[in-house]
Amino acid sequence: MTDSYKKAMAKAAQDDADAVANAAELEDGPDQGASPLTTEPAPPEDGSPKFNSAAFYDEIRDSLFGGSLSQGQVDGHNILGMACSIAGLDPVLEQSAYILATAYHETAQTMQPIEEYGGWNTDYAPWFGRGFVQLTWEENYDKQQQKLDTVEQVHLYDIPYQVHDDYNLALDPRTSALITVGGMRDGDFTGKKLSDYIKPGSVDYVNARRIVNGTDCAEQIADYASKYEDALKIGMEG
Image 1 (cartoon, rainbow, N blue to C red):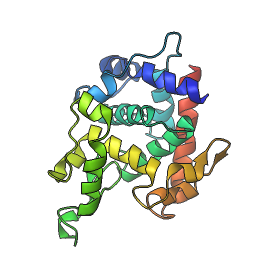
Image 2: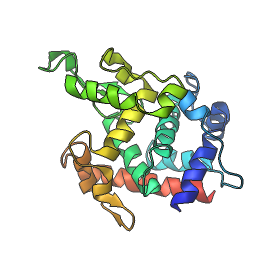
Image 3: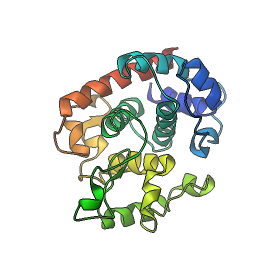
Image 4: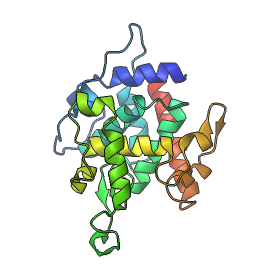
């Protein structure tokens, strides 16, 4: 399942964004344009399975989004999905499900990077929270800038990465997706990482919340992750 899912995500990333939107029967909304991160990956291996984006979106539209999806929500899923596919996650399906569930919760279901409410009034302004997962404090912006500079796709697709030099770049969906996925994989946010709780043969979605924020809303986010896992499996089977 893990290898086939990786191949399927790479294959799905080549789908035209408008075709995905039409297949998902989206509500009318602005087309935010395709990101190089989602439209120009290396081609998949011959014979790799095709991920059924329409089936995936059909499932989450009902199970997580109350029957409708905006273009921005689809774009956010696509960008996070590609960030997951290049991150070397293992098991990629379950870890991807938890990343999507975290972004769903942290962005209030918008699936777009957001700013921390009241951020300019914090002690750490202007380095307050921004992103799919909130990046805070100047030293962390600096750390992520240095880390992103080492990511091949950042330079290949000209993704803005200088988040310490310009903190608003942490709101770019491509940039934030790489920060979120890499940060959860490597334990950048709390010292806890995905493989501490989600590994081959062992999945603990509840305690995985410690990767980002202690046990806050842990059960709720675990439920989201289970629904995303189901949807990803449906996409694989479809």
